[in-house]
Image (cartoon, rainbow, N blue to C red; front, side, top):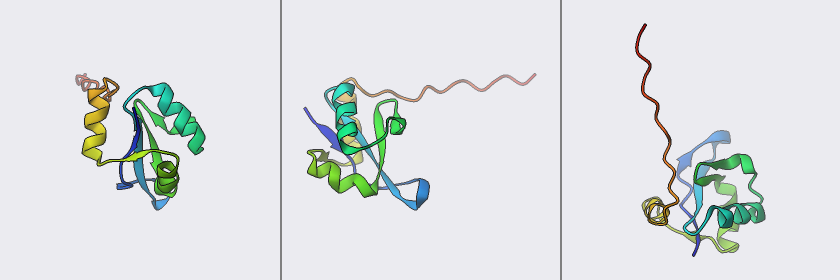
Length: 94
């Protein structure tokens, strides 16, 4: 199984572009890889880590597989690890 990273394409804090880092095997594998990469736990969001463009090449050097954003989501979903954001219904006006 693999740790996957999509290209840095998402605008984010500090004027950087950001990537998503996921595992298609387990969240344990993902957390261990992120720790080796030096990504803080606060960067974890439901099923992925948001990582800045400044760590993209290092993630590849550590063994992450570069994939498109579409493939990343497809493989995360196929592995049963996709955790969608829960949307709450709008409150009724009083």
